[in-house]
Length: 364
Image: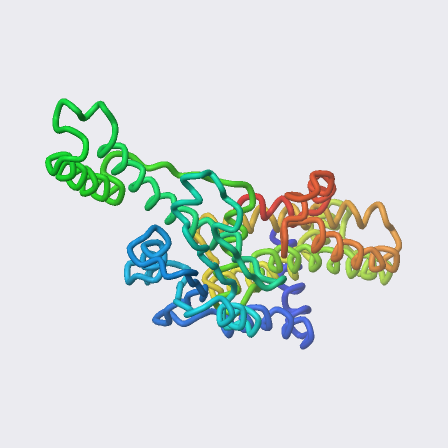
């Protein structure tokens, strides 16, 4: 094992003297460092235009508009701002000053009461945006909360169950309704009783895309790191085959030869792994350091073992070298590096398991 350690250090020195290899290893952390936002920089919100038709002050549409554009929304991912009319809203979306826009139709509350949901709220969005559906959920949630309040207040004013307290239409019944409205506001916002959290397939990835679109970068750091380490292992297997043809390992005994060859292959893979961990740190993507290092060590062992077996199957280094583009394209397309294709086409998920980056990424 001591001799294998020496061969490992010599392999690292060998690849460290190759300027192109070092530049590739240094480029990824530097790129992540350049793209990451500064610690004190606040992530810009996604701009959403809204307007209401037909002067709905005091009505459900007007209250919805005030709720969306109010100061309490300033801490969210979306920034709703008011447009005076529908035409200006269209212009805002067309010029991409707004990611999308919502037009609150006239007589919104009357339409909801009559269960006429057509054109209650219209949406304008750019074809390439990924935020329209998410912003629509925010608008719908705000509308339902306000409309439920109206329904509850109307229930207190008119339902016969409250006749024992005060007759319908009396000032006492109106006072009870006002108190009920205040209680509704209190218990619907302080989350002291309960809260439902809904999770939908692919919503998390859409939120990440929306946040990354706001910051101007969608660089998939962890996925690129997984592919880089994997391809470095395959390249090490190619070099191992060429070294074998040159007779580099002939002076070693058979037992020493196996460990020393594996150590030579592990040298560049470990260097790529260190570069990958540095890129994760520079890109603010690294989790717990100990867990990251342990998972990366296991991934390095898996890559070296896979590359060794593939090198034994493909004895010709040139054939193995020709297989590298196949593994690169397959890893990028079938593994969740840039986009998780398996979430849309389940058959592709099974194919992605044939590539090692899939098994690394599934731990995160």
